[in-house]
Length: 363
Ligand code: ATP
Image (tube, rainbow, N blue to C red; front, side, top):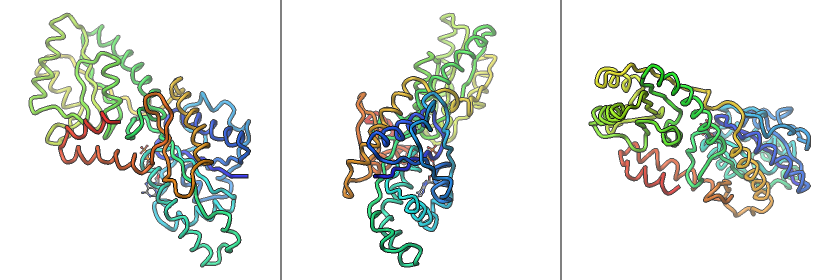
């Protein structure tokens, strides 16, 4: 019987529980044993009770729960080889040789490094007499499969990440609430949303709420942005609009790579456009709450395919990440997706905004 471990890592995202549920139940369906590794890589390094067998009924009710019920953490020990050596020992102690990771690009990179090091880690455990050659014999190859849990929708090669549509829904609800008070007082609101390197949430919120102006990191505005923004907003007001909504991503920049902060935008709207302006930072509200139907569906379908991928991948297959492209669940090479994601951040740093937008468009 194959033994498959699942863990959630990095920032929590609504829908992670749906993925855990699907993985556990699909593993059981294929007559494998499923294990939940609690608190991300921390649980893998600590071992023992942090790695628990999961039965069908252990994941009952998971589909509609937000966050991650098996916990997540940032684990410094796993960043270093000795931590990963301990993790390998703990996995062998439980008989696990396949891991499904639900996390962001950092978590998936860690998993790929772990897989590449795996044969060397086993040799080291044998050489130091921690395990015998016989102990490690059945575990020669480690299977790794990634699922992307991230509210930012920041991974290349997939149209959506688990959690992004719930977050977008939550943000839209918040903007709708702000709308009513803004309209009553004829105020302007600057609403800051998450997204350090990825403007997807800000852009889609703008489209979905009919915002007046949007700032995203991939497409910084020209030096004239203050006048441009005031012109647009004054035009909207002249047409009878009683409210002004500006959406700004956390990582918004100008073309010189200076941060554009919500307070800077507020000052411009107050002084240049003469509007009574407030700032609302949504913060962690964006990450919380019940997963929307799309994230339940996505996490379930991807969880199902993750287990199939574990069973189908050979030692030669590069670790896959389960994606969705044009409404189809597909597998992509995990490290290619991570590398392309990093290219966007590099293009922004190099001020090659056309390339950043092209890479985002290509996703
Ligand atoms: P988010 O997008 O929410 O930040 P993430 O998965 O990118 O999610 P990270 O904090 O980058 O979040 O990574 C989570 C954990 O994954 C780290 O605490 C660490 O344990 C592991 N990890 C990340 N990068 C590496 C790496 N290069 N080598 C080994 N482990 C890593």
